[in-house]
Image (cartoon, rainbow, N blue to C red; front, side, top):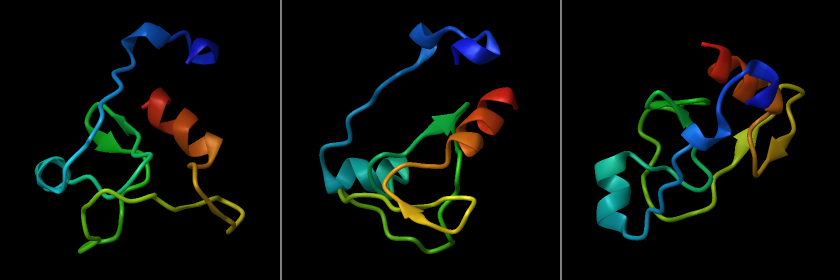
Length: 78
């Protein structure tokens, strides 16, 4: 965020601690990163919500527990 001139204090960390809340938030696992309410790597249609670990696909095709840093930067630039 600092590289893009954005205030890191603007980040809101929210804990989803129930299946009911996961459904209400369309939460498909942790970590879910949203910028202006939009998931930086939207899950496929029909992806189940719930309290689970999330899997991301990096740009080079690898599977990762975190999104590709370039996806995060692009979302923040938008």
